[in-house]
Image (cartoon, rainbow, N blue to C red; front, side):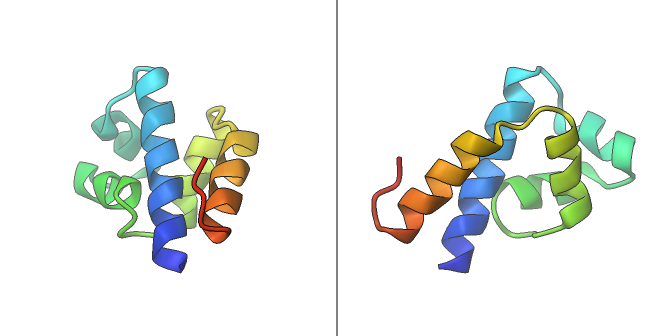
Length: 78
């Protein structure tokens, strides 16, 4: 279950990053991580809270994220 939630978080972060027209390299440069680490996070293979905090500080829609995770927990992704 946790892996599914990490994938949802990563996907929502990736969607948000694309909406605000920023590349993975730019995110990494701002917070001191490589593009590969950002990619791992967005693919659900890394649960780094510093990376997640960057997305939160840059306008990630937490209501949308919460609804998607809630849907995952109940077997009906929204």
